[in-house]
Every structure is written in structure tokens, then in C-alpha cells.
Image (cartoon, rainbow, N blue to C red; front, side, top):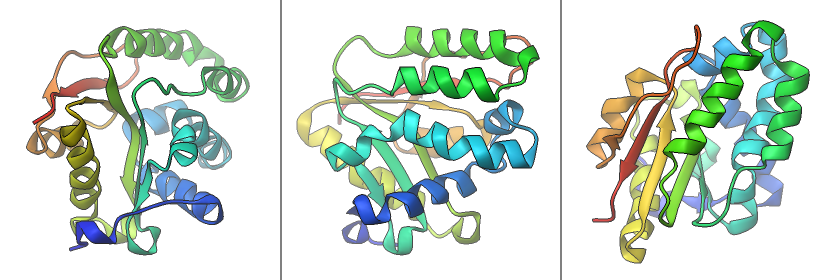
Length: 195
């Protein structure tokens, strides 16, 4: 089990490896693979998606990684959003036409569920499948939530995999709705108040 002291902020030299760890970690994610079922398209689009969703965490020192970058979490501080323009571009050129409207509706639902008050947002957390089950995700989560609690700030995420919901609940997140459109897999928005 990785100790919390082994958590570091990713920097420019480790950014690419951090992104690829997340790409590997989401390779069997229901929503990611619904978006890009073709493996070649997934591998071409997902790194761009990771950067658009959580890339600003690198600028703020809140892209956290475990030893060896075996797991990573991109946290966006209060007031920092995803790169919506980049997300629009990725969706426009990479999605199958038949799911474009469903994805647009999912993104609207995500925007509607984001808390109005200041909060930390976790768009992406994953472990390289080779290292799953060793407590790396728990270490990453504890590290970030300690900061949320010390600041008295809520944390928010959307779970794209129903199997991960109990993990988030163990860390104090509560389900606040469901986002689903057409034949998309469900997204589960979850909120954790500061402890």
C-alpha cells in the first residue's frame, strides 16, 4: 500500500506518463468505451480528452500521482474549470455521429449537477490496471480530501463506472443524482462536504 507521503504533484516531465496512466486506467470504463468503442479511436482520442478534462490540474500542482506514476488523480481547484473549447473540438471530430446528441445532453447534465458553491472537482482518477488493488486510489483520494477538509471546501465528481461508486462512498461522497441520455451508460454525480 502506498503511503500518502508517496503522493507527489506531477510536473512537466511526468505529464505525458500521467496522462497515459489515466488512459490505461479508463480502458474498460463504460462511458469512455461507449464514446470510443474502437480501440484505435480510443487511444487517439482519450489522451486529448484527459488533457481537456483535467489538464489544468498540472498548472495548479493538483495533478497527483503515486510512486512510479502507477495511479493518478487530476483535481481542479475551486474556480478552475475544464477546457470546454478543447472538449467541444474532441467531441466534434472523434465521436460517432449517432451519439453526438447523447453526449451533448450528458455534458449539459454534468454542468447542471456541479455545485454552485466553491468546490474541488475530480474529473479523473485511475490506476494502471497492472497495479489495481494495492490501495493506490485510496492514497490519492485521502491526500486530496485532506486538503479539501483543511480548506473547508466540498469535493465533487461524476462516476462513469457504477463499480466505483462504493469506493467514493467510503471516502464520504454521496450520490446526488443520475445523468443518462439515449443509450449512454449512466454518470453518477457525487458530492462530499468538507469533514
